[in-house]
Image 1 (tube, one colour):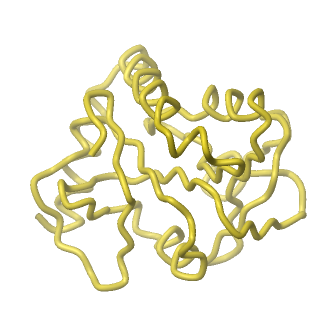
Image 2 (tube, helix red, strand yellow):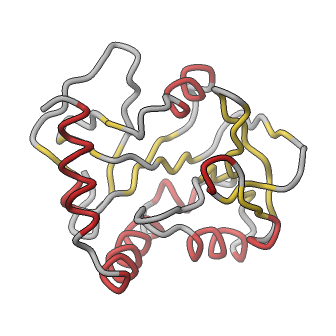
Amino acid sequence: MTKEQARVFVKAEKNKMTPAQIHENSRQIIDRLISQDFFYSADTVLTYVSYNQEVETHSFIDNCLSLGKTVLVPKVYGRDMKFHQITALSELKPGKYGILEPDNTDICEPEQGLMIMPGLAFDKEHHRAGYGGGFYDRYLEQHPVFYKAAVAFSFQIVDHIETESYDLKPDCIITEQAVL
């Protein structure tokens, strides 16, 4: 399956989900994520802020903050993204594409941490089809030290996705049904 075919398939499946299904499946995914050893050992968590029909991350961010973890979220700068520390969800404002971004200008460059990645589709070999902007590939190419965990609904896992040499894979994928 090409990346575009995977994106079309997953978008159609996402559109079938009710808000209640998104919320419940997200809760199961986040519960599975926070039970992993790599989560507990991470002092710094870099995570996307959920938008539209993605796995919801707002409660995850609150959980990380309540545990005293340093939380960094992305902000888009042209073709790149940089990460900024937040101490509360109230520090986020709509940015590019209407996605919530930090309202501060203090860019953080952590040397290690746990990266929570979004994506539209994944395969069993951990190949990833993102939204087409290449933001995570470019960022992680310059910052390869993070443990990368993707969160996705189970229907986002397809048999195979054709990828390019520059596509970076998550170390694991967590769904409401399993940890791959």
